[in-house]
Length: 401
Image 1 (cartoon, rainbow, N blue to C red):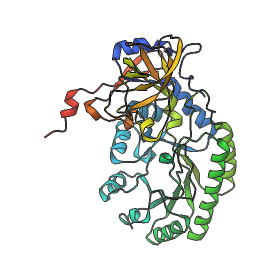
Image 2: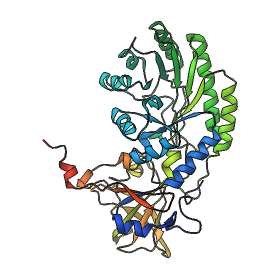
Image 3: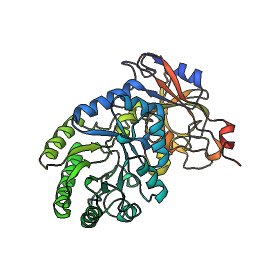
Image 4: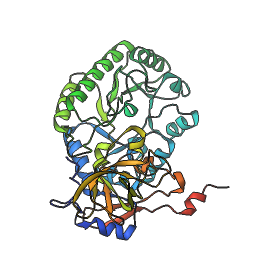
């Protein structure tokens, strides 16, 4: 893997034979462009590393139904965090029997939405379970194993001072209560953080979790039909970042998992599958005082402003190197900075933001009255397809009464 693997060999301006300038000409900017080939390659590599595991694509990473549909055709399920993500997955053709619902602070209405459709729920707390107590044959709780692992504090979801999961002692009591309430099928879930690229650290986390699950199983008197280790598999965001050794992680994890006598292994990857399969193409509108002003702002890519994430930014056409400048958008906030560029660019040039397939559109907004961008897919046969149109003013008024 690598930040440039989405492009054709020897080119940083074409994907599957399609010129990115042509895509920008057709659909305008800003536009997010995805490579179907890259998505397929990433999913295939993951499945090869974990051949016996069930893979549930994390819809929160990118909820475009055409992407969910593509992955469903390759055998992926859907991991969802809200009723709308469930509905989007159903729309994309995912069977509800191949879905998980992993919410936190869900309302009774939200929980019943999943339950009524036969979707397995990963309960974040015992109080969440109590809303549905006595109704469910299959029960799974999210565990906070006491440690977290994530690239940034904001995407570390395990350990102290996080809102996610039950500690192991509380989980034992929760499973005992669920068993007493008549539940007969059990799963267990963990998600400790996002964008991790060190396979040894991930393996140690999984190995520790399997031991925690063993203890809970024995002391609560339940047998786990599935063990869900979540997602969090990372990708390089710059050419200096190291790849995650997914083959070694899969082999080591599978061997360790087989020693514990659980049912089957479950993964919930999102970013790993789609993150490096998308780029944003934008246009330079202004260059002044060390800033490159574009039509790509924090309304489209909030990750840098939200927790300091970084993306490589390159000119779409060949340009000479120059002094480093800050790339900004059109939003009335000084945090509207999406990264750095070290090329001589001018008004009218097109830029591309790499590794923009995950947590970009799904976290976008209409702040400052800016519409969400178009999304296009470059298919494996070298054709292109608009998979979500650019918003217009009618979208801003669609919910007004």
